[in-house]
Length: 246
Image: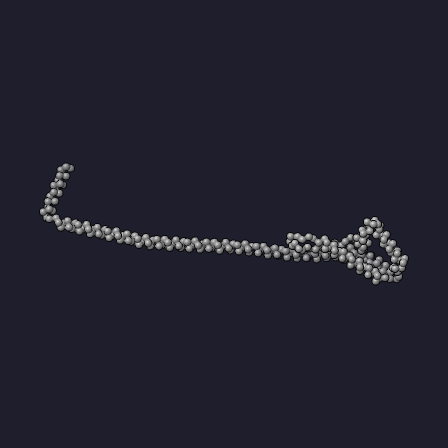
């Protein structure tokens, strides 16, 4: 008797697990921008609604379209009566043992069930919060790493600008050195040209002085003492005339 009940209860548990798994996969959260286009993050499902403490509510609502609200209870009573009347389900001593165990089980569920459920829910919430906290910490760490990488890329752009500025400074220095060398060459050429001009001017002055000296010397050599005396007398007469006029 107990073996039959255990077999039936095992089948019910497996069907309930399969139904819950199917509902979990069907109601999983859609893909978000952070999770990626091909990944759906599963959401922890709450237990489905049950009646009589263990029977899924879907088993009752299945009869509503055909039999109404009282249909599931009528089916359970008639089917149980059929099994008992045909002695398919025999009420031997194991039945009463199972009945007493069921009463103890129901009493334990009613008394300890809420406290145990509250404790287990709290443990599940703590476990889930720990996972979420770990996920949040990892996400913050990765976000910080991304920010550091972006900052490093920005720094590399600044390094490129600095290298370009240094190249421009070197080009300006080369241009300044080139212009300084042009100025130095200009000054040296000007000095040499000024030297040649000054040299020609000196040669011209020396030649002119020598020519004047030679002419004066020749003129003096051509004047006789009588001519010189006559020139002096004529000069004296001219000076006297000028003195008388004054």
